[in-house]
Amino acid sequence: MSANVLFLVLNKNQYLEEILDMFIKAGVKGATIVDSQGIGRAVGESDNIFGPIRKIIDGSRPYNKTIFTVIEDEAILDDVVTKVHEILGDITEPGFGIMFTIPLGHVYGMARNK
Image 1 (cartoon, one colour):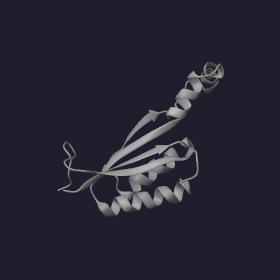
Image 2: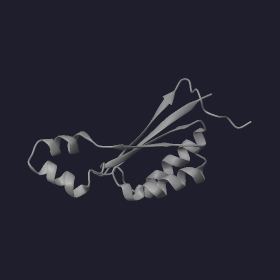
Image 3: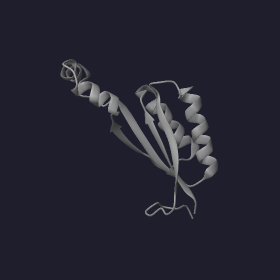
């Protein structure tokens, strides 16, 4: 079995629901969403007097979401990557986040359709 893990660090949280809906429609069986914060924001908040004020105003919300999912089907993976690009547009622009895949050697605990 060949599988990949797809990571999407999403800085534009307004796209989260649309991306998750697309994952389901594309055949992704499950995904994990983690609240995350980049080093630029973390260092920027702790280095100046405005960090604590910004934290109060923002309600201590995380700045982005990291979504990861294991995808066994290469066609589904290609489809999902293409559709993420369609939803987000040019993710090479600053502030969008990053998306990447990593091939997996062994996967344990995933239910398989028979």
